[in-house]
Length: 445
Image 1 (cartoon, rainbow, N blue to C red):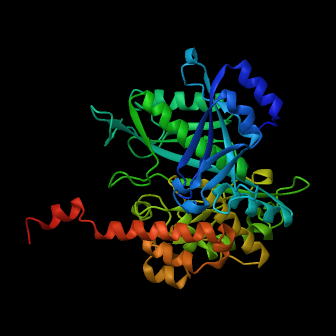
Image 2: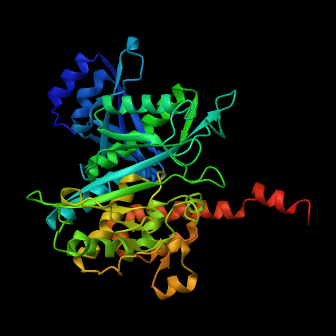
Image 3: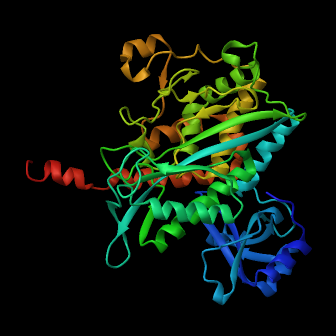
């Protein structure tokens, strides 16, 4: 993102006839929040003078400690181009959350990612990230409520008129580009009603900001088309769910890709192998952060291209961690388990912390998996030392509670409230009577 100053933002806001500013941040669950202010208050906002009630935000703080200060990141200033301009433009700034004493708020997900990136920097690395966000477009009923009926029957790379979401996807891409995104590709995905838009990789903090913005923009533009965009991992039984495959790479301070080594096996450096080793070592606990919903585990099952087994490969796509074929400055690892319901700040922080732990402790991964793991028997997988990802939210919580590295990376405040929220979610889910149970049992027993 471009360098901005307070004076430049004020000047641009005047030139673009901005009338309102949205000061945005995310709660622990990754839900985007905002405080809307008239442009007359923009200078106060840029001076960190806007406060809000943190006790009203999920997982933030108690009511007796509720005052929070928003500190805008100047580089995130942009405008929402799809809003009608006859009433003035709407601007946006992404904010860090601070306490009244100007100390960073420990429960701010963006701050958690900043801390992990500072650790990477102290080890000599800049972290680059590139996610591949998938989503579904659904119809709305007569009252505007989303219903689980897809907008088309198209499949992978299909074109219009079969791909009826083509117009909406085009408008989403256009809005993103006008906001400063460099969109590399967009296409229909494998499942009916499923789409993917890929934007260029960047440093991990800017990329997390873009994921949060991308989800917001996608929903807004879809709504203008009378559709509902959802990042729910598995909204429809029997077809592929939505993933957020995440590509990660490390660059040294002199601009060299630390994962690349033409002399190493598969063209990979020891640093890359250790990073992979860390991802695999922490994969069970990591799953709570990258796959945070009960519904996430309906996607992580065999048969729908999502990873289930803890392994890596430089050759095939059935593994949890894949190394794409390109080398040089494009050498990277792809973690294939995350889904787009995750909080991107916490997910990136946890992924990076796991990889850095692998580098720090020189964790060697097992041999690269050549065979398609889905075609292996349980015995063959066990003999190869291939474990499973957690099969439910409850299992993921248990694994996360045992992972001190990930807990340290996210901090006590976030960890305590994340576990509390997810335990409640699981308890509510498992005590519900679901439609499948009614269909299966009501007329039989």
